[in-house]
Image (cartoon, each protein chain N blue to C red):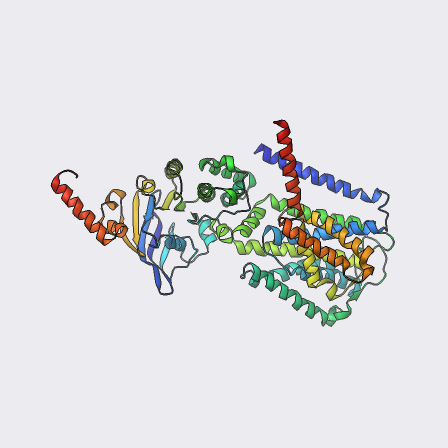
Length: 335
Length: 256
């Protein structure tokens, strides 16, 4: 028991160190307030948070959802409407968006959870299309034109800065820490164990007193509200939103791919996935984007194929493999 | 007092009647064996009691409350927990985490649940395997894991579905001991078992099913002499021969 607790402590300490390093990053030259590198760091934090939100339902609870762009979009529109349509601060809109996303998630997942395995995934595909079309023709929220942000006073109140990316970076880091802490907490408590039990065997879990439907719905609601939070950050950073930008299968795939490539069902997986994929995506787009559209996507696709074939557990699987090999050589040295 | 009352439970799959109007009581603190040839409907009956199937007819009472047609998790929360004949480890989780999932029904407090899980691992002789991934265990280990996991929920009624099949003699003796110890602590236990050496010495009562019908319910000593039971296990032809041989032997005075 002692060793187990000690191990957990080491894990937490390494996470805290990482967060500390990330929080002093803007002080390092090369990461100036407006640099491309800063932009990439912000995107890494955002994608890691998105992936971690998806990881709750997709990784830990085992329900592969392709519908997360809907929740992402609801969050984005929550903030966007508050600023563009009502001329207020985005904060109330963010909270409403998160609550709304959780409600929508529960309403659409309840019938979908009666489907199992692949059928659940297919049903969530359809939902993205429905929301996408619905939002395109819905005038109240701007329809196909979307919402364009006006130039307003910068600062925390308006969640907007014009000349520097540093505050965006810190807010992204805050969201990242928030979502990772929630998942870290869940991992060690009853709910987290129940989620994994539902993933590994729903009937077995039920025979041990686990209400699997309630667990899945709660996980979905939590995951959706976290996705909405990421969505509202995205719109505040991007200053523009339209339906295809947020509510598309493209966005949904990002939630899924980053997590699965990093290692789904693990705490570090989403960060690992984002840390590799975001720079790859952004730099290939920056350097080879001009070669005619799609070179970045080709490289992206190749990497995904290689990893899925060679290491289905994701990049975290590669790390564990290296760790194991390292331990083995150490043991041999001792001998 | 009877902790479990089964009244006329019938389970049909289309035209096939897997359980036909089965009734019996399980007394609190008893070990009850449920035996019968393959396809007799033993596991189906367990599935009806534990809520996996909704019986086509009849009623089931647990602790005086009707539980017929409740969801499996509701029945488990009331204190009737079962294991599966075809083992179902939560295969990507460690052995310890498997048992912990059960223990969280006993208490939602981490500390208490952890202690309970350790206790059950020790009891089922799995302590040295606790950090192993459950899917990597041997069949014997998986069977013991099924039991440890169910035990960790601290059930009032433990339903064991062939936990001894495939175990070595030593392992089997160990599980028999564990079951007896549990009964001494006041747990009621129902066991489906084919291994007669495992069940006959410890059962207070044995219920025999054949073709979905209850054909006998008695103490083990009488069950082994029951003609219907012998017939069910050996078939009509062989049981006749067996009886004739027995008569011959009694006549010859060589055997009694």
